[in-house]
Length: 445
Figure 1 (cartoon, helix red, strand yellow):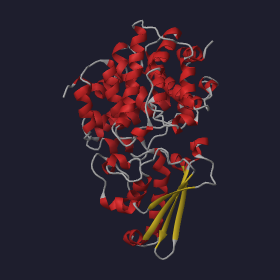
Figure 2 (cartoon, helix red, strand yellow; figure 1 turned 120 degrees about the horizontal axis):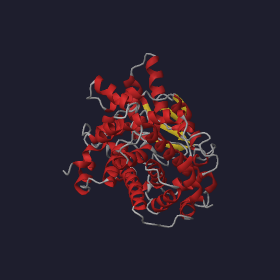
Figure 3 (cartoon, helix red, strand yellow; figure 1 turned 60 degrees about the vertical axis):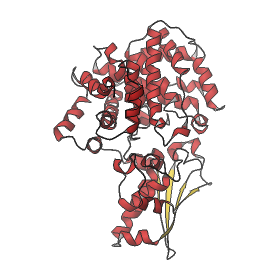
Figure 4 (cartoon, one colour; figure 1 turned 90 degrees about the horizontal axis):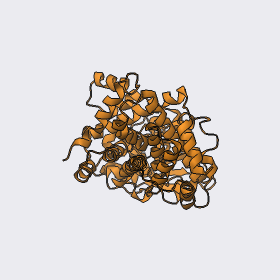
């Protein structure tokens, strides 16, 4: 049996656990929190208006593209370490877009499709190997297309042959480059992936037949740079489910995940200074240099050194560290469409990247990443804090607080309603969520 056939069998026949479904509910709430303010227009987003000027249809693929973009527009959506990308913002948009074709879908069946998608995402990340991302591919766009296609096949109860065909069609559409980070095309990658998954699924159900065998193998070979491990795509499937372990990582800050432990180190240094009873302005005025150390290659995603907009600043270690030291926050308002803050930019200019060559390269195991921030002051004093990625992730994220911060203009009653809907405890919950998340797709501005 070919690799594609084996994967198709698993997608069709496996049964996610109750624990996996519960984790999926958390992922659903996080996605709704970050996508809904873009969909509803609560947060201004110029690229969405531009997209809607081009994508005017009301079909499933358009709904998937727009919602995929919306879910990734703030760069506040979840991350999966095996995948090295953002799985939910490609998987759920495809599922919500296809719901009209499966109107009687139960909440559990919907969650199962989501779990299957995350499983494929995580396993694809392992199978593709570290060179896929390092070589310039954006996993959310490339591997995400296949993950969303797998989830879509499961949602619509595709048989093994149909699922293999869906995977084959989706694979040949999978593309996206990290070179687009810091632009509107980066979140559009998520939309493209969701759109491609829906198109592949609908084409397969319409009877269009592509090559099913050896397409996944060819994809991994072409994008793996000789470091691919195809067997990791199917070996040990669901033991444990990727959505359970290592699990989805929910972002505490609306910036690149590759900046978060650096931010946490800066938060600590700032707090320690203030706890000593010294004014903040004396710290800022006396900083001569800020060094940030990390494993070689640990800044591959946070690649923007001198950002010109809040969107570019999401991918800047320098700007994130400076904003944290100055304002003790990393809020959505700090990383919007407008220009960067001059005061933050001035402090960011003092940040120097200093890869720690004694540490194993980041590509070997990104979960072992760390950031060590050192402040050098005019009097010769040095203050240092080192935070590992694992320490940052272990802090967790309060889902209710994140919902409130993203939908700050909503009322407590509305927050309660959204939390309740995301539990999918009633038959009406899914249709209501689907309508709210895809409503903008019917507009033609």
